[in-house]
Length: 405
Image (cartoon, rainbow, N blue to C red):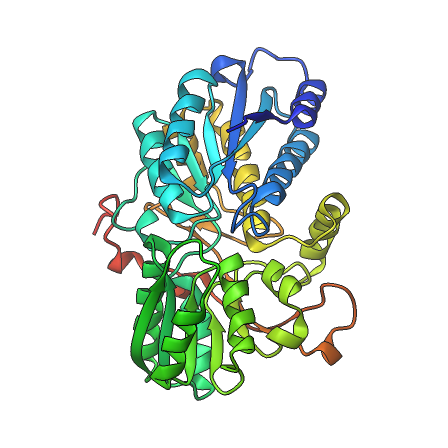
């Protein structure tokens, strides 16, 4: 696996950082070093991958320009190939030999759970935007991990409630067979039953998948009104394409439980019109989101997903905390991250809780019909703003040992 030093970000940091003063921040090894560990070429590369690396670089460049820190900032990146063992080994290498302070993104739950344990052992920080499973801030939480963008509890709070309310009472799940898929299926099942619906069954597919025919036929045979797709990225895209080929839709409805704008863009509005989804970010929500997203578009020639936007937000907040703490020591930085509210284009009055959950508003979106889309990437109606305290697991129900009750 090739490690890549992002020369432009490093050069910018060195060139723009002012001369150190007597009150210089106490930064270990001469620089704050960020490692972007992500899926650069696989199932999740569109929703995270190179776009997350670019978002990280933008956060560093903006932080240097606006906050004028007295410390250097460096960024490196690597492809974790969606494998936990590769991720854990790369994290140890980065911490032990590359002096990395914080690892960011970590799309895919298995990689996130593996790296956050290594980071905690080394007293380093994990900023997770790409992975979604609730154990990250629940049973397996630790005091140097922050889960930023979304989780499998927050997604069905919007999507499943809306679909059941629209009459989709009977559900069947096609689930990616690993921790993320299991977590998403369980959290969605809970919301469906609490909302008055019924779960008829489920089937699990290997991750990543390519041929979903047998799983779709099982779902078709169930007679369920709604087929819940508890997967993501290319797996979701291929499930939706093959469901149409088999004539499953529109006789049965599909619910994409983790849909990204990159998925909608790939499938097109003809295939996705009317679908509900829950997201932590939409580029066209307000003037602030549009301004940042258009800068991102100029660099990547596509609009950002919530993972990429959330990664920017997490990195910027982390760097502000380093400056405020006067050190890059993990526990001191974590204390500042919890102390300071998150206010940027991604989140308003967001807060990092004791369990590491960054609580912020989520959005229930519905994909527009082709006739409703007026310009490129004009894909969503925002149907509801879900307040952060309603979107994420209440602390009173938390299983995280860091939460005092």
